[in-house]
Image (tube, rainbow, N blue to C red; front, side, top):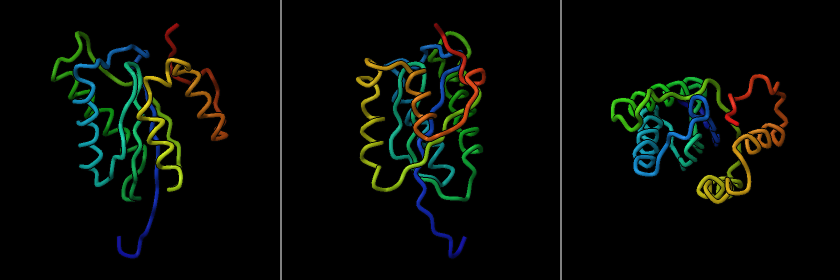
Amino acid sequence: MANTYSQIYIQLVFAVNGRQSLIQQPWKNDLYSYIGGIIKGQQQKSIIINGMPDHVHIFASLDPIISISNLVRDIKSNSSKFVNEKEFVQKKFSWQGGFGAFSYGKSQLATVYDYILNQESHHKKKSFQQEYVEFLNRFEIEFNPKYLFEWID
């Protein structure tokens, strides 16, 4: 779109269906690269993708030509298909419904990048549930705990 200028940085967070720990070390980088390709195919720019066996964080620079919901829908459906076609897991792989989307300014890029890069050390101290609820509270997003992800105890 001519004369349209934007600077939108979004961190997306979503979990494996049932919060199962299915994303494994031998193929997680293939999954993250594939997700990066989906983002690029939608004319968006991924900055970093990382996560844990039960969830993923995506930090991207977005252009307003696509809605965040449509982008996440495409990421989830296409990456699920990729994992299933590659037979990375024994059962059917899918993502849980819903996602978190959190916006940042340019001055916060390095901080968010480092946070996502260091997911493994971060989650030695804090569960995904604690992390996710902290995001919702920090960004002052009203939520009903009943509708958060299905938590595995």
